Amino acid sequence: MTRNDWCSIALASAMLTGCLRPPDTAPTPDPFTPGPEARSPFIDPRFYEGTVTQEVAPPPISGGTLQVQDGWAIAADADRDRILVVDYRRARAVHAEVALPPGAEPGRIVSDGAGRAHVVLRGTGEVYSFDPERAREGERRAVCPMPRGIAYDGGRDLLHVACRGGEVVSLPAAGGASVREMRVEGGDLRDVVVDGDTLLVTRFRNAELVRLSVDGAVMDRVAPSAVTDPFNGFIDGTGVWREAVFQPSVAWRTISMPSGDVAMVHQRASDTELQLAPGAYYATGFCDGSIVQSAVTVFSDRGASRAPNLGMSSLPVDLAVSHDETEIAVVNAGNQSGESAVAIYPLSVLDTSVDDQGCMFPNETVAGVQNPVAVAYGEGGLLVVQQREPARLVMIERTTGARFEVDLGGESRFDTGHTIFHANASRGTACASCHPEGGEDGRTWLFAGLGPRRTPAMHGDVTETAPFHWDGDLPDLRALSEVVFTGRMSGPRLSGTQVNALGGWLDELPAPVVTPRDAIAVQRGRELFFGGAECGSCHSGAMLTNNTTVDVGTGGAFQVPSLVGASQRLPVMHDGCATTMRDRFDPECGGESHGATSRLTEAQIGDLVAYLETL
Image 1 (tube, rainbow, N blue to C red):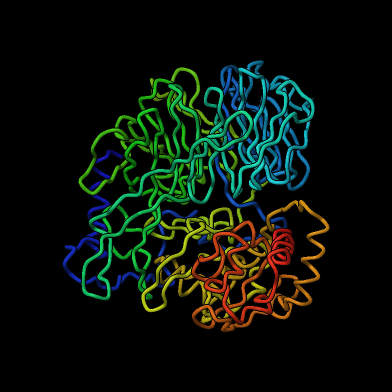
Image 2 (cartoon, rainbow, N blue to C red):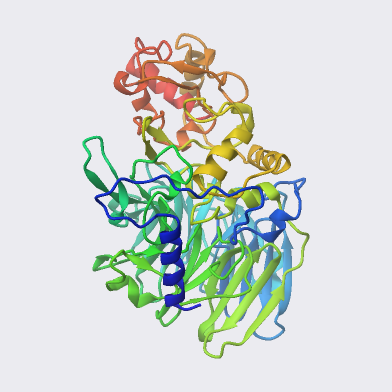
């Protein structure tokens, strides 16, 4: 499809759904509420053929699991806990398959100067290093509890691994234990890029790019620019039209470009006041009208490029830049089927003016791709796309248009709950847009008539924490799916078995792994939690919540949230007022009736925080 085709489709969709309107008129509720037979063109067609639940739940999509080097295409298959080495130049077939321990969840891949490949094992906290010719003879090395990104430093012959907990671990590329560990305050690290004598690490939820010196000192922090959308906004309490500002969020993938610049594919989130009505998550706007946009930002010596909205994009989990830097390919994992799953854009458009509305539609799309998770460019303009289900590599010679596919084999990992969670419901937004990897986007949204509401996390046994939402107004997952997925997201109505499949998959999401730093302080904090501070009276049971709605002096009656993984989802509280765990004990944020904490000393609060950070 051409760019003009995409523009026509988007414009027609906007007009049909009432998304386009002059900024001096009041918004109207979106009338689109699909019935039981409505079908989204973006959802895997198997969703409509019957409910399937895997005995071992497939992990959330993380993207960026493909590396192309020296005639090899190396794919990390997180769904089947294996690494596949494909000889695409000679045999065009799988050369080797490496079976990993259950739950290893292989992720990012990098190659070193000697041609070895190194794969992050997110689930076991390791890196697997190997020669592609003898892939099964590799070495597994421990790095940190939650490794995410990896980069090769040719000047020092080191691998640098970025970890969600904030660690940056360096280890010799040739083998052996780690030689250095640094820590970035705030954690939530995602990718790492070598830039001369410094390292650039990204923070996942706020899309921040942090520059570190060789000794781990933070030298600089930068993020993609916020943008104003004149077609997206709301009328405030004084009757004045307020244009929506889209703030950077969720940096899915960040890579080093051939020129040395850095490219990040990320989301942006609107500060629009959201209405409690059908279609509320698509109130206005030009491209697809979503409150969540996709964008690519290029960071260079000239600063951050303008980042237009990628029209028709959903869950942009990976990107690749051609070797000649003429084009960029983006994987839209939310578009599980259809021609917008992998989109190709001219790279030059990122530095020039685009549509008046800041919209960019793809010049080309890759046809016949289903459930993509990763993309990479090889020698001679080869474009490689990795599918997760069915497992396959799609390879296209960009110069000739020739196409061939390599079947990676393995059992089907199609799962109805996983499919629902990651699917573009209709016009750009998936559950995973605000709950990336089953967690949360770190944002506090503004709801009309309610005020600010912090995105909750979904890790582990979420169905045991009903009723849902901060106000406790949705009694179960069925009600949640009707109000949010079908109503506000305009997705298809879910059957009872589909709702159960979604709940079953969510309940299998693992909680973040944390490493205590001071065991003595943690023990003192635990005694306070269940003793003098009286926290355990409400935060009880396996999920550390009694599932009640309570007024603790923070502005109303709110659900007692689970504290599992609380320190990994800052800021906390219903309005996100606590940017650190210690801030929760500020009376203006924590409330005067929020446990017996007002009389705690600073030292006791420190102990309590130490314990909370282990949950």
